[in-house]
Image 1 (cartoon, helix red, strand yellow):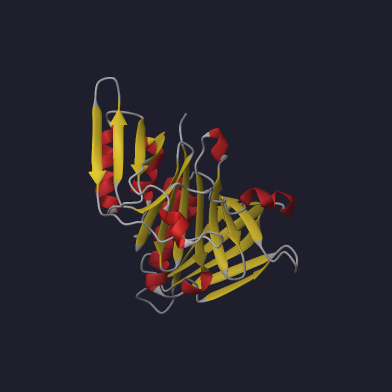
Image 2: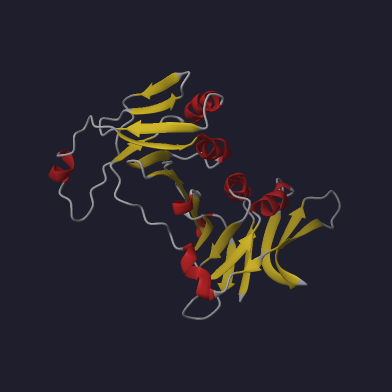
Length: 284
């Protein structure tokens, strides 16, 4: 099992740091899955038990100048590591104007991701700062616990409003209740609602647009049979929603939300070379 990678381009390094920062804000522990052409950061709390799930996918070719790995076996050419993303985030913070950053899987008393940062210096010798981040190697028999979460058939899919706007609305609502109701329809309308014994607050968003999903077995006409004005809704933990809105630093080009009524809210943030999915289960 071997892994080594190198980033030379500063823009790629900063972009990778933002992705890791986002993960550090969303999860205390996560799984880093390394494959030949992709990296994944995975948090798979059991949604059935009220936990959130995160699935973040990166094309390694868009970030790394060199990327070599040998998985656990030829037919299973992947490596699954458990790590604290905050530790990786801290290591990358020292690399903000680095000449190169090398990341390597090493064994120093325990398995580690060793991050070597070459910093510019005034003399001819370069300064190298090394961070050893302890990781756990996940055995192959457990890999199936880290599959991409399946998206249940949603009732409504809608583009999100500007995330900053949404964040400031949710932040104000957080002081009034621990739960928030998200509802949306196929006419591009979305509402965020708080309802308590004392107060009822609703923020309306209009003209957001609905993504043109058409599955293989569904003709476009059957999608139109659904009542466009009909609201699908789910009540979720407001802190989990705020964690996503406050934590994301990917600056997505597209952000959308799928609602399975009273079951789950599924967020997708898309950037040209990163996709982040975030699943929040509905409260009873």
